[in-house]
Structures are given as C-alpha cells and as structure tokens.
Length: 267
Image (cartoon, rainbow, N blue to C red; front, side, top):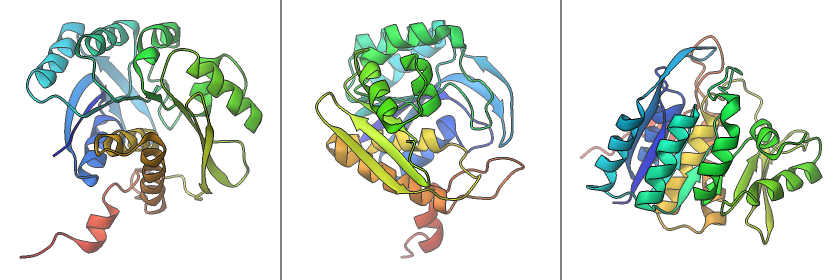
C-alpha cells in the first residue's frame, strides 16, 4: 500500500485541514499519516483561534514518520508562522521526500487568516523551493507573485513568477473565465488548463486541502503530474457537486460520496 503524509493544521469541524486530508487519502486507497503543526478551532463560518505546535514537537513528529514508515508523497498545508515554516523546511531538506505538494494556505474559506502575512517571505525562501508542485488559489497567487490577477494572461504571469521561486511546477486554482472552474498547471515547459463548469454552491469548505491531497495521493500511486492533477480535479469536483449542507456557513465537501452511495461490500 502506498503511504502519504500530510503536514498541516487541524480542523475540529472535520471539513478541511488534516481531517480532510485523511479522508481524501482513504478515498484514494492510500495509507494516510499526519504531522499536526497547528490546532485550529474553526467551523463552517469562522476561525475562533489557533495554537501553533512547538517547533521541536513538529520536528519530532516528522522524524517519527520518516524513521519508520517513509511516505511515497508528502502534502504540506497550513504553515502559520516563520518558526513552523523553518521547522518543516529543515526536516524536508533532511529527509528529502519526493514528491512534495505544497498548498500555501493563507486564509480559511470564510476569509479568516491562517497565516501571519509577514511570513510570506519565509514561505517563498524556505518552503516553496522544496515543493515539486505548489497549489495556490488566485488570492494566494497574488500575494506570492506580488501582482493583481485580473485576466487569464495575469494567471500565466503569476505562474511564471511563482515557478521562478524554485518549485518544480505550479497549479493556480480558480481562473478568470466566467462560469468555469479553471486551473492552470505550469511546469516551465507547458501551460495546461483544467476546466469544468462551475458548481453553484456555497458548500466548498476544505476544497483546497482536498484537491492538493488528492494530487499527492495520485502521485504516490504512480501517476505523472498532469494525470494526477486531472484525476484530482475530477475527484474534488464530484465532492463539491455532492457537498454536505452542514453548519451555518460554507459546508464541507463530500469526500466519500461513492462509499456513501454504494456502501461497503457485504460478504
């Protein structure tokens, strides 16, 4: 069985973060492991507070995984501050895993911040070069690239700027095509677009976490990057189409819609 590690923050409401990652890994038939870097008190409509895990505990969690069950892929999500970023980057350099999918989480779906904006320079300098794929949404791409994104050509320019930071490839999620959910993958050679009709729903809590985790799972299963992204796009689109109307805000996507519809096989 292939193994995938998520290094990220938690979500006590179960829709995003570590919890979404584990559900996504299980849905893809890979063994999921976790390193929790922040404990987040959040629900579908607000982030109440979060507490960062001590740097040495983050490092020891990573060591515990790699010395015993080395993962076939790593997904990195919420890294809220410089100390966390430096701890994770140091251990990634030590253990040298590949592939690494970095989802630069800056805000929750409701807009509440999950990263100290003064730490973006550390993210770019220390963590981004370690990513085989970096998956910002439009707002995160604007912050990282230092530019406004108003058109598809702007998306392409932002992708070029982020790739120049040292990562292997960049996937910018959420293009500027009206009525379409369009993502752009750039690996330095080719621009590939993944486009589906936009789904009219507010229940999109955890979509970014789910998408990046699905990519990591597919890479661990041996897919080349363009195929891994295409399959992950289909998975997250289905999860959004069957999203759960839970809570007072943005409800969670449905990670196990196939299982819920068809159930476990009965012997």
